[in-house]
Structures are given as structure tokens and as C-alpha cells.
Amino acid sequence: MTTTAPPAAPPQPSAPAPRRRARTARPKTRSIVLGVAGILGLAIIIEIVSRLGIVSEVYLPHFSSVIAQMVLIFGDTGFLYDLWVTLLTWFIGLTLSTIVAVPVGILLGLSPVTYRGARAPIELVRTMPAVALIPLVMLALGQTLEMQIVIAMYAAVWPILFNTMYGVRGVDPKAKDMARVFGVSRAGVIGRVVIPSAGPFVATGIRISSSIVLIVVITIGILAGGSDGLGAYIAEQRAIGLASAIVKMYAAILVTGLLGLAINSILGWAERRWLGWDSTTRNDA
Image (tube, rainbow, N blue to C red; front, side, top):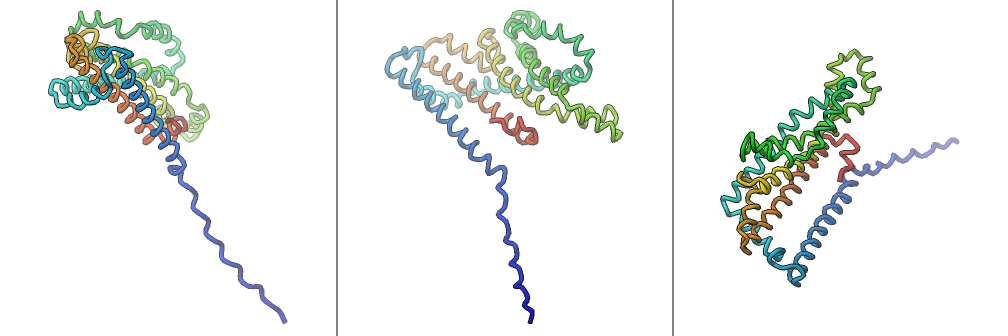
């Protein structure tokens, strides 16, 4: 008499693999919490220093008063106009810098001869501080929006240019050779291999330049005066010198800091959203 073996039990479904988003959610949340805690800690320290009289309230108002004033100045149409002018100048300066720097960076990265020929003059010109050009550009354009844009472009074009150039030069030669093996033309290799591979470097250069443009635009307003923008608003309140004006000045400075933080966060999110396949972008905090 033969016996048959009992049928094997059906395989149990394996647990689904955890998603990458779930693995990265906790570190990202922790980073945000620590960042907020750091900001609150700094605010508390400033408040304590001001309350104890370690620094005169004339020079360092209570942080709580600055926060309250920051909320109030958003009801001031003059301040809102200055904020709009700063954002417009920032956008135009960064956009024009990108339009100029990316093609030039690709050209220098693709051609070793052009790179060696242009390296010396580029290194000479880029070492000149942007603020040193304010008197010269003011003579040519006056205290105008165009003056701010020209100086902002000069300061912002270099990070984008060099990041683009190094990104193009760093493309894996095997990837380009593989494309040629499949019959892709030189223009196709540039458009389908070189530029996408250099994309994360270009994005990083744009993000760095975005902060530079904002700093330069506000600095021009403080130093040159006359033109509209947050820098001119800060300089105007400083010139008034009254206690209420000093609080407004600090409130405007705080707005500029929050504006820079927001711009950097938005551009960082865009990098992770559109260039998430790159390890350096994906791991960027």
C-alpha cells in the first residue's frame, strides 16, 4: 500500500519591501525639527541678551518686538513694494545669469582648447568683488533697477559657469562611447548624455547663485541707496535712527533671512524632485 505525501503548503506572501520614502522620512523630519529648534534657541538667546541689558536695546531690540513689527510691516504698502522689487530683481538676475552661464559652461567643458584659452581671463575677472563695481556701474546706469541686475548677474554667473563646466568635464567617457557605438551623433551625445549628466551640477550652481543674487541685491540697496528694494528700506530706517525705525530695520533684516531660507528650500526641493536619481541630490539635506 502506497501513501501519498500531503500537498505542500502554499508559500506565504512575503512582507512588502519598505519604501525608500519611508526610510528617508524619519531623517528628514529629524533634520527639520533640529533646524527649528536651532532657530528658536537663537531667538531665545537674543531675547535674553536684550532683556538683561547686556546689549543696549537701541542697538538690539527685543526679539519679540522684532517679530511683532515684522508682522505689522506686511501691512505697509511701501514695504511690500520694496519686497516685490527685490524679488523681481532677484528673479531677473538669476535667470539672465543662468542663460549666459550654462551655454558658456557647456562650451568650455566640451572643448579643452577653449577651456585652456579662457581659464586665465576668467580667473582674473571673477576675483573682482561685485560690490567694487557699484561706482562704475552707477556712473553708466545710475541708481536704477538695471544697475542692480548687472551687478547681480556678474556675481551670480560664476558658480553656475564653473559648476556647469566641471559637470560637463566629469561625464563618464564610457557613457559617451556607448552612445557613439549605437550611432548617436555628436549633437545627440551632448543632448542625451552630457547635459543630463551635468544637470545636478548645474542645479547646484543655480542654488548657490540664488543666495548670492539676493545678498548682492540687498547689499547694493544698503550701500548705494536711492533705488527701491529691501536694501534701500533697511538703509532708510537706519538713517531715521529712531527706536521704532530701528525695530523696523531689524524686522526687514529678518524678512530677508526668511526669504533666503525659503528660496534655498524651494530650489532644494526642486533638485530632489527633478534630479532625485542623482546620489548627491538625493542625499542633500
